[in-house]
Length: 201
Length: 192
Image 1: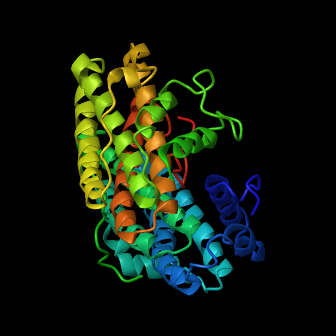
Image 2: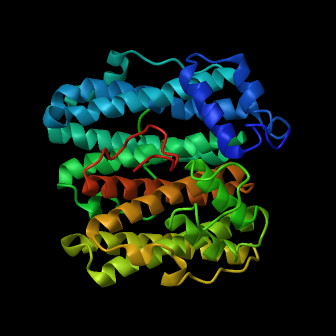
Image 3: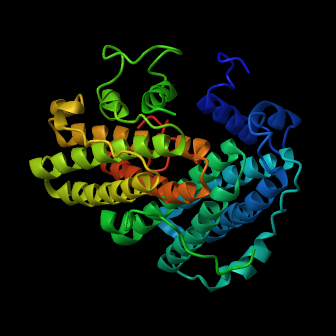
């Protein structure tokens, strides 16, 4: 690969990967050829797809959870709408990437199935919805962080880290709503680890 | 990977340098000129070099937040700087221990004079903008670290730090009145 190639620079390469994943829903044969070539000798595409699929389930569930709790969020509904879109962006990108790796992305469940699995029917108030969403995001963070060291494709590993960081940011905003934007609550620990999932998706 | 190319890549990420350009005080914004102060120390290759570069950045953050605390520049928001200073120190402490385990040499902490532009921070908004740039640089640095690290144990160590820097960005952006989570994929390349 020539040094002046846009793929030579790891930053440019990742940009290209993200562009592929975000703009070509459902995958692209060009993805692997253009974005994963450097890693081809050392990567485990099947293993990467497995690791990503576990976390992808949380992106799908998160999208549904934010949509289904929107009515409870009242004045913070705008935040829920924004985060639902971001969860969907994660899901679209990762599902496409898994397909490009030769894997089969898990399919999203229906809203009613997520409502059942996550206990959304029990939520009646804004504080309850916020508390649930924080708890859910903590599990999603755990899932993405768990995937990071298992992913052999350098670009996808980085994206998984970025999604984990985005989940941590969601938690900060949601906790901020609960606490009146108290930084001690929004950034309580120097090392964000999330919480081990207690739901089966 | 040595530290200097990594810093140049961060500048490139922001579109502040043209490809192949050497770091130049004339074209690199003030904060990014802090880079060479610790990059000079980052002489190791591979994983130790990546850890070394991250330590330099964390040490810079500790210094910057410490100055904010001491100056009372942020007024009632001073506890935020103290909170973040402690968390950046916690990151640095863990990374320093890791680097020692890897047999690397811990870089000397920067001095205020090494962080170009810091002396020009006069108001609370100046500081918030400065800290925002620093935190974005941190996220970008850890994103690149995840891409280039070889040891999965180091990936597990750095990803939670990257997430915490992302949370710092939320708090700073809210203080500045901007969208706290402007992107689904925080790369550190965000404007603000």
